[in-house]
Length: 375
Image 1 (tube, rainbow, N blue to C red):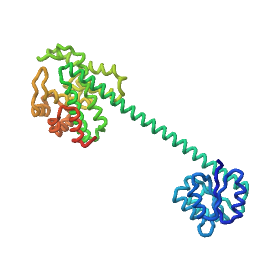
Image 2: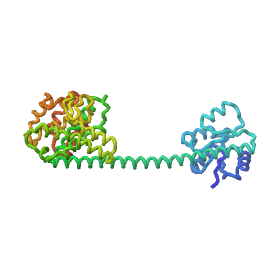
Image 3: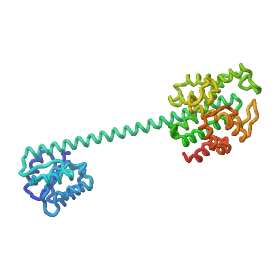
Image 4: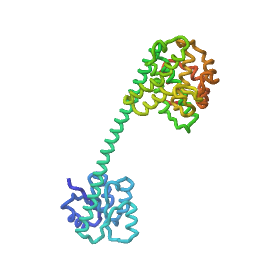
């Protein structure tokens, strides 16, 4: 279909002259005044490529037409060439402010009119095509982003499942019920979110807090490599046995290093740090590296306290369970080693939440969400 040109002029002769100039290349629409032009635009706006508009007309003039077009947003889609015998700067400036694209001065020059109409229609057609291509590209980009988000979510879910399965295997071998990893995850998440709230300068985010909690399930993965005679021994370890037992940190880190391609880099790094360093202590008296203070990754520090608390309040093959009050006081008083004072402060704030935990994982998550008012 040829491009449509709407010619608006109250003088019939002018309309005829312009129509003759352009009819070879364009389908012509004409209007004898501004009101008729607006009516035509209302019904055919999508098919009009350019408007040639006289400014001086009785009743409804060209400036009113321009103001209506601007108000309705038509100026963004349809170029306007103004016909005028008035070449004053004031008139042209007023028209330009309303969005006019070009001017044709009377009397008409055939070649000039044709070329200006062609130039402006070509320009707008190119712009429309560019916008359509951009829209298609934007749609493709949005669909691609949606796909990447779904893939990232699925990867996260896979990470969670892998970690939980591996953690549960360790707990069953250790004659635990399997709830230990869920409790430690819950305690860790609580501590991490409280740390984020109290110390925003740390840069800890809720996403990272949840990742640390998830990764905590693998803190004891190295116990897979510990002989049953030591792992399940109900009595005190000898020096040699203790050295073997403490090696579960380095052995676990080695296992996770070999599994680096199973999950994304950040998950793998967090799991590795927790596994290797969760028995380090703030004063440097932990193991295996005897590092201290903030040299210990925050993720491992958070899991360390959560793990100790759960070990204290639950029965193990080598000990009876302590009461929650006893466990709280032992941690606060340093009987289980020295912890980061900031994390101790978080633990103090969360005493009731720790003691009220249900061992059911869903309940734990619900309680944490309720405490921090998060989803």
